[in-house]
Length: 273
Image (cartoon, rainbow, N blue to C red; front, side, top):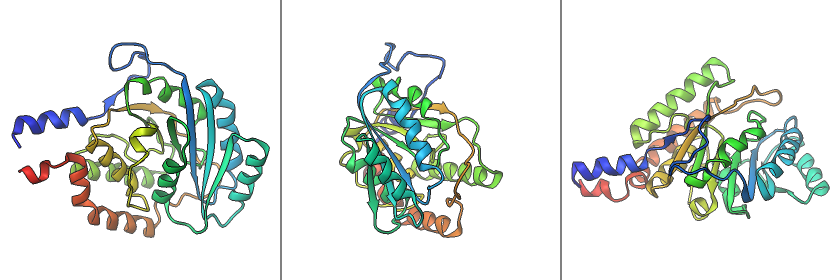
């Protein structure tokens, strides 16, 4: 493949940074802020202290951005009352659904389940830990008219220093290995057109999945935009993303999937050189 063609492909796949103060889309027209239908799915593991507050927050805000919507709690084998609380919320409101994993299968499997069970034409991924403001959905939905994916970027990450350092280091490593230009790889607040993710096969079960997801989307030449969103402190539950087992698993997935993800990122170009 020629250098000119390679450079052209890279430019088409780079995410566009969206100015939160500019309400015009990438084509110069005003993007619609209201969606015909939206699935909001919440990967949750031992989030009994957060799940009700998070679900009720999205129930209050979703009518402002979508004509029809559903909220799906993906309980990833929690050992606490997460599923019990979500089941009660689902019984109270038909817009709430609970999908349960019998055992803890990891964040990647919870994400894959969310994509497969979504019923609406647009799909919002939001971590179930309560660290994202439902009001910020408006920032993403108002721009999806010009993109296939709009991803949040935590302007001021409300985590302790080591978690911020590890997140930044992982993003840099992912960018270097896979040619991605996303600035906040693991932000758990992303909006997708369902058709771009409906048949997507994800193999990583843990923290590596966000890199895999974005590499596969880039390989499909998805139009990706990034926009700053609010990040809130966790007020209940325990963060598990920095545990040694999670980190080791992420690196294991990273190396085992490296060549496959390179092919997903650049299509057949790795075999043309």
